[in-house]
Image (cartoon, rainbow, N blue to C red; front, side, top):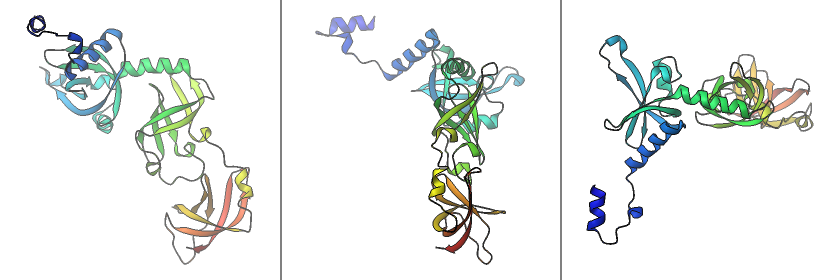
Length: 278
């Protein structure tokens, strides 16, 4: 009614030239996602406890926001098992499907699990063994990356990230990083996929064997120190293992000169000895 009055009162009024508010656009997106069962994405901006009549019904919800509109994803629809795991996801963008909404209250409820299930079905239809695809890192520990390839979580251990020695994965991969991975195995029945970032890279072996000959000395950088020896990076993807120095300690990042003692192409290993700390 108000719009009709405005058209009468303003000569030359053109409704197509009236910009909708951002709030209206956001609600249009929510309505459309609910009606068409499409997937939206937004960051988890908080965790709230919604109190029920019975205290036993109290439950935590992940809070997502579209503009100024708040969405709640109940714990059982988040895809995580406990509050600790939910906290680890705060600040990250998550996919979800709108379950229902309350325009008057300015809120909607959603399910991440429903979105992941739909995404997984699409992913399993599209990928094949041998494909190189993108995996987005969602959680990184010292020895393992958990990543998403489209509704399916994949685990990439430290020895499948790249060629060469990695001391600590948290120094190499960050949450949100996009990794190129090769699909190794697909278990459609259990919706599990095995991937490797290393397999999607060019193998420096055996070519590097011709660049690091036995008895010669080369400059490298200490990439890791373990109780059994010192790893020295000679070029991207190629590290040698040297015994500890007798009278001097080295640390990660030190530049050293090493003498190549043995090159094993089959095992992709280079044994060396540190002759000088630069």
